[in-house]
Image (cartoon, rainbow, N blue to C red; front, side, top):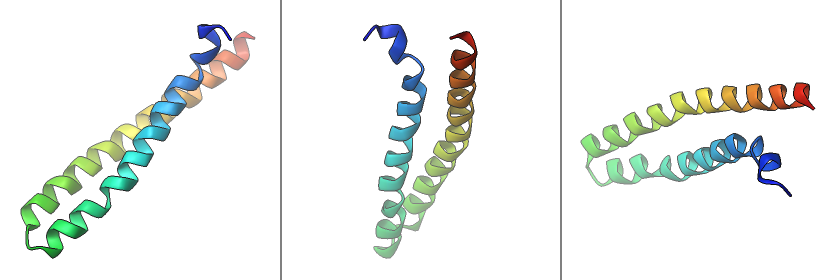
Length: 73
């Protein structure tokens, strides 16, 4: 399979990886806050908000790329 055929799936896979990492990280604030480290939990939640914000952009770019590639073929 030519590399050019793989390009449309790259943003989708990046987004998929980002969602998996977000899901794994979501349990961390609960653990650290349970142990009394509320500030660290807040920092993790802030990072998760950034991931969530960027996920929207990546997801939108992925949909736009697939739409464009479908028009070009």
